[in-house]
Amino acid sequence: VVSARCQYGNNFPPNSTLFRQVAKLAGGGSMVDLGVHALDLVEFVTGKRFNKVMAVAKNVIHHYEVEDCCGALFEFDGGGFAFVDSYYNVSIDLLRNDLEVNGSKGVIYTVGSLTGMETGGRLFLATDDSRNEYDFDGPDMYQAEFEAFASAILEGRQPPCNGLDGLHSQYLLDAIYASARLGRKAEVQSVAS
Image 1: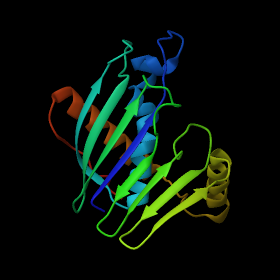
Image 2 (image 1 turned 180 degrees about the horizontal axis):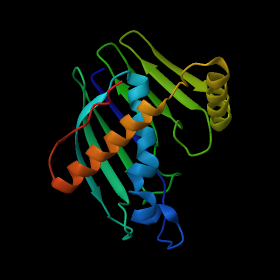
Image 3 (image 1 turned 120 degrees about the horizontal axis):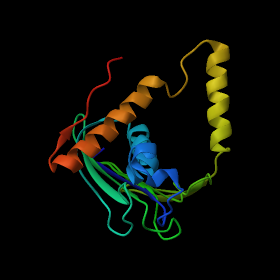
Image 4 (image 1 turned 180 degrees about the vertical axis):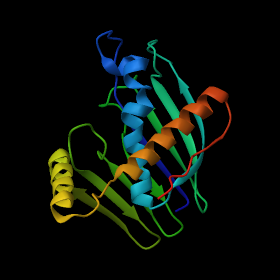
């Protein structure tokens, strides 16, 4: 994997009753709420972990307590990089909300893969020799998560995403906000397994 890019956003105009716009309730803005899903998706699809980040988190359109947009450039362990951007100031119908992975032997990108509560979309795979398009659809994402978690409990095994995965996501967010606040690259803390 040479590089990856993932975007996720929606427009949330100022609303004093919306928890996601209150820092002490949400803990952050567009990156905590939406971007974290893009972060997880990039790491899952590439099989690589982020280790360093340079980020910008700003209020460009909406001036509430948390950022309305954030961009983060990551370095992968073992080389390569990824860019993840998140928004609270552009309609979900206007954003691509997609994933792109560029490798030395091919490129994949999706359309419609991060559209809120819907599942499915279109996957494009390109190599030197071929170009293919695939429509994909998935089960209800919450049903699949609950079933996987319940099966893990019943079978006495770890769930597909465990507490260490959640902690790693939190460390990514901590590094993003540290970088944005300090204006320099930040290290992502390692999770001890």
